[in-house]
Length: 205
Image 1: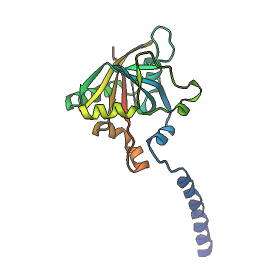
Image 2: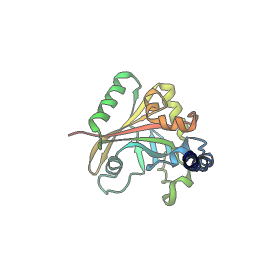
Image 3: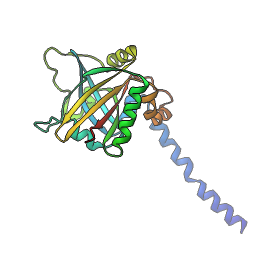
Image 4: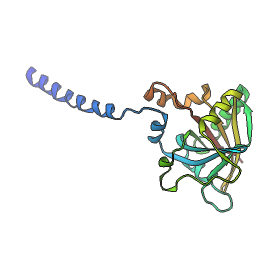
């Protein structure tokens, strides 16, 4: 009786060691690699003044439908390739409270939170990098991140999609943005790469 119990226990425990090596091979090195494990929400150019920043955004939480409806040209219905950042806002508590309130109002399907990282031509699939308009200078996303960090600001812009309007908020690394990156932090241990957290909220009627 005891022997059969013991045998039963060892056979139950056996599969466990087989599962562990899988994790080892899948070790993610940086935030860009982590982003590849998420669903792609949008890629294109973030535009601020005369600079444009090739960016990939992957969904951390929220609704893909918000992205599909708001990041589209409101006349043609095609996907926007550029997002213009209209203003810089001070990264202070009242502004954070307002964004948090809008996220709560928009839950569960009126908002999306995305991780924005530097887009690479290979990461953009068949569409490739959108063409840059004359007069715009292509720059790395980290330049925008360090600019916002230096100014202690977040960037925002209105989004007028085919199916309504909304607001986009772009956060440099800060306490507010880190709350959405807890699983990335657990996976990677530290977030060294420059990145932004983008919040898109649909305007409530």
